[in-house]
Image 1 (tube, rainbow, N blue to C red):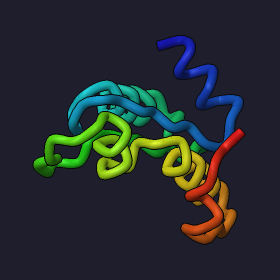
Image 2: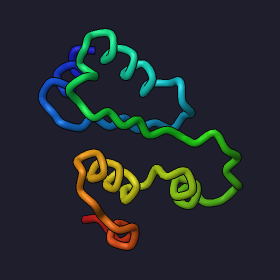
Image 3: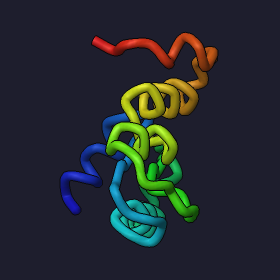
Image 4: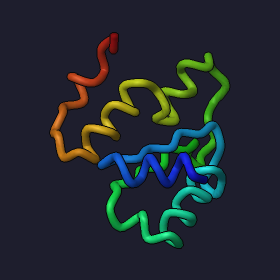
Length: 95
């Protein structure tokens, strides 16, 4: 957890991303940061699979439905930083 603590101390935003539902790595990170008092100074945003049935489709389409694509991650980061960005601005290619 030393890496997570270092990231929380030295960054304004901390995002975890996982291919699992709530209660996994993001929850562990959140709990640890709260216990150590580091959650007070960082904007923590866990990104997980939603608790819904995701229809059979391509992997890219499933990630898009779940909100776990690069544009979703960018939108989450910018939102945590207080930067307003329209949905259409995020939906394009990210280099």
